[in-house]
Length: 126
Figure 1: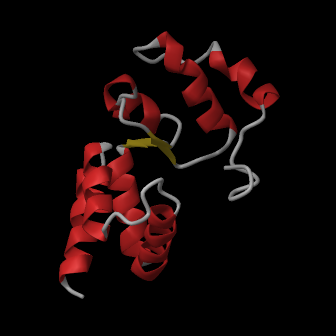
Figure 2: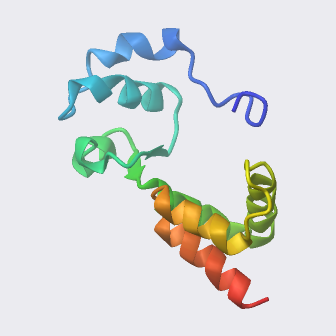
């Protein structure tokens, strides 16, 4: 991650003081909200949406987004780049001989069913 996006990480010293102020359902997730606020981000990408209520996040100008929906929106913004990235991911798999359809199945199994469906639709149109 550090190689792909060098500035992705929010330094601990920027969010630790904010953590105690964060009031969300799961106290174990306060550091996530604190880092998001300190990092001035727009989204918290998480499958754990219930612990990040929209009304609380709105106070900070944030939104929690499911990873599958987030990936689909990124793909829609630049489908050519997305397909290239999926091809590279597939090539790095332990079983690179797996078909593109197998790769889509693995995405669905891994919790990304909408992403898998978009990829299957692209395969069907070729």
